[in-house]
Structures are given as structure tokens and as C-alpha cells.
Image (cartoon, rainbow, N blue to C red; front, side, top):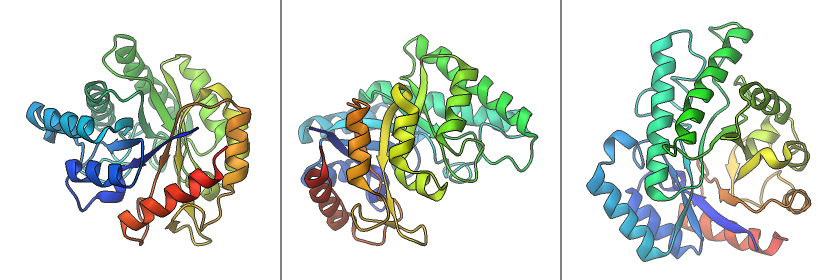
Length: 274
């Protein structure tokens, strides 16, 4: 059976320890910690706070499926500063944030840390953007090789440098490091006009984490099973690929109350799971 987690992003109005309690009560096996305010922003989560979090996770018998180092609203916004900024200092802030999130992931026992697909390319030439991203990824991969960070996963996303399965495979080839893989967000796939099941088959063993996000015709996030994602086809592709990693439900942005959405999502996914 699959391992289902819920991203803490669904509970942005709650403290992280409270989110842990709600996720456990909804019946999930794990929680994804978003490495941003108000939850797991590393500079704001000191040793005492991490100890409290680990205690609550153990008490609720929840694992951490992933640490999501994508959003950086504590500094600017969801994607910036990015890996491909023209300003080297800003690129360094993204790299350092990812390293800090990786350190948090190690402390919480998370198997992976995920990041955005490079960033917006409106200020840099495509070749420069690819070089900046490659070099930044290699820096984090070196930390992972020293056990300072778990494997880093790139999540393709519309409007960024890395938009599709093909894009991510090209950058993985350029980086050439086993400490870097990919994360797949089903909602991002659809918004990029890519079939999630086909993307799973194309990514193969590079796929190490999956975000289950459903969207409607307008791109609005909805409860899984009520939108456009073909979950039976997705699960069939995951089974064919012998994927055995976490499936993290992403409800960030849905207008349904998180407790209700979390339970409805899990009920649907368990019925649909292979």
C-alpha cells in the first residue's frame, strides 16, 4: 500500500505542531514540512523548537515525507530569490536556504528536500540560467554527499526554467550527481499541459517524491478526485514504475477547510490506490 502524507501548507493558519496533530487525526502516515514561515523556516526554528516538533511527531506517530524548500516568502515570495537570479548574492541566498532546509530535513529524518525548477528566466539568458542552476545544484549535492543534506529533488513548474519531465531530465544529466533527483507535482504537470502519468513513465528512477495536487479548469486547487487529474491512470503508472516513495497530498490554496479537505482527499486516494 502507498504511504500518504499531507503537506503542512494546508495549515498555514496553524502552528506547525498543531498542523502535525491535525494531519495525524486525519489518518495520514506522514507530513511534509514546508521550510518557510509560518512553519519550518530554518532560521526561526531553533533547537528547542525542533525538539518539541520531533516529540510531537513521535507522539502522533507521523514521519516526515519531505522538507519543501520551494517557497521563500520569509524573504520575498514563492519562487524568489531563485537559483537563476542575475545577482550572485541572491542566488547564494537560495542555495543557503536549501542547505538550511536540508539540515532541518536531516534533523527530522526526512528522506528528501525539494526545490523549485530553477526560477523565472526574465532577467537572464537561458544558457546562463542553466549554468547558474547546475552550479547551485552541485553545491547542494556536495553537502548531501557529506550527509549534511538528503537528496535534493527538482520540481518542474510552469513559468520557470524547468517546466517538464524533459527539462528536468536534461538538467539532471548536466548535474550528473545521484544526490539530485526529481519531485513531481500533478497540478503543475497539468498546468504545463503535461500528462502526469506520462511524466511518471518518462522520469523513471529519477522520480523520488510525488505531490498529489488536483486542479480545476481555472487552475484552482481542489480536493483530489474533484478536479482534472486522472488518479487511476497516475497510480497505474506509479505501479508500473515500481515507485515506492511518499505520495504527499498538496492542498495549498484550496478553499475547503483543511480538516475536511484532508479527510476527503485521503478517503478518495485510498479507494483509488493500487
